[in-house]
Length: 212
Image (tube, rainbow, N blue to C red; front, side, top):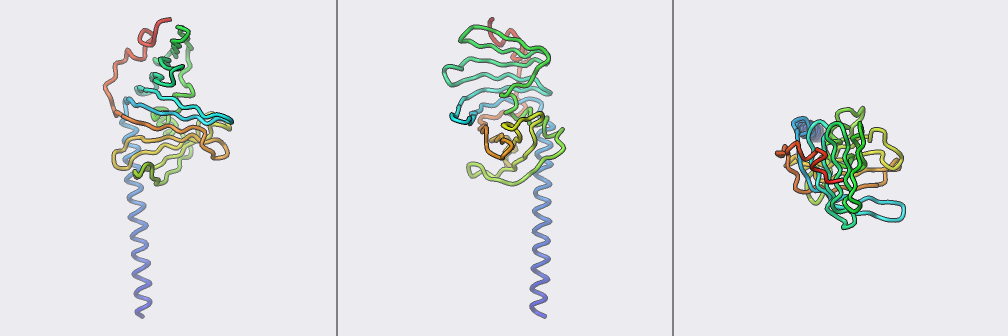
């Protein structure tokens, strides 16, 4: 009889623990969705590491984003790319390359490889994706909720995105982009993320990008 009571108590405690974990995860997911849904603008610094077949490329950028799709990316390093600016104003994509002092413009095109590495476009993928997986992970000893979605129109080298969001602060800390085999092709580390930052619309315009 005593053994049966112990088993019963163990089952009840296990069920309570599972319910508690599910509620905790549901609460975290609700907070994540609210954070993303209420995100009108942000600015962030990012270190991007791209792994190729033979080489690994590192560069640092500053990104500004304004809902639904306007963005500006400024390359800070390496030196040979420093000063490159890419900006989408809602209609035109402007690209300024200072080393040749030239401006390029593309109409009705808004996504570049760099833009797909940032939370603003991940948010769009999350809300339109047919499948999203969630799990708890640690990054730099910080408890995170990791969200995995498929890259729209992705290829064998850019198949999945995983965004790590701090459970405590509800801000993005890292993104991983995986290939079709599950290998990490791109890692992005976010710093100085400013949620709903005050951003002047002019920074997305041609005049602010550079001089042709």
